[in-house]
Image (spheres, rainbow, N blue to C red):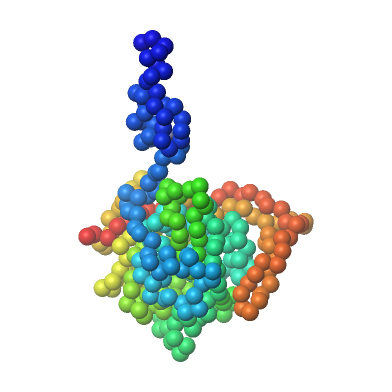
Length: 337
Ligand SMILES: [Zn+2]
């Protein structure tokens, strides 16, 4: 091949504008080009779905609607009880569902508002936020019927104390993907609800009461026993599982994170679900903020205005320390069709 021929054998990539050798062109466009659009890494299990109309509409607004669209939020959602501030289900299933409902009764309000401001969600910017009142979620006189039988030693005391000491608040945020990113990182928008509440009570008050099942249920290291939860969410005979799964409506997918030594592949403990994939995530809470004295603190200071928490200013004495991330081994299961 002479020199002239080689020059002719180049073609300009329409995406990145680089000249690519013709014999490498197809490979470049499909595999190598930095500007190519890539599918989400979990799209084979969680196929991309259109952003729901309610979310598209809301994302165009200057503020979140006064009337809370509870049924829209619940339909096709991912429910994550005892969530902490772990981003795992958003990393894995964002784009298949666009509504994430987190609940935990062990998260302080200041910790939540700090984490949600920074680091937030990787690749996303928070565009809308408002607090949620309890009566927007359940009717004022709604009484949740909680169990009388406890499977954990001190289960009842743990439950009563945790509910008594819980820093009660609810928050709703809408997140927009950064402009330079594509579906590989997730959909353009998603919605996040965070409620301080017990997982089973929240499930009963939200989903069960409205006869809706979450599309995805995420139970990742829910922390019974030493973790301080009052019942084992992962016990197939436990009250949580019997309530959520053993009913006529149940989730299409389960994201299960256990403490056990990671298996290569693990059959589902719960009847009717098939193993799809094992994956790892790292908990977002891998940075710690400390003050001059080295005690944990938050990066921002907060004030409450009309019930909404706002950032007052940045605390300049705060240092950020990187900690080894908490690694979650997560098994993905799909319901038998
Ligand atoms: Zn290219």
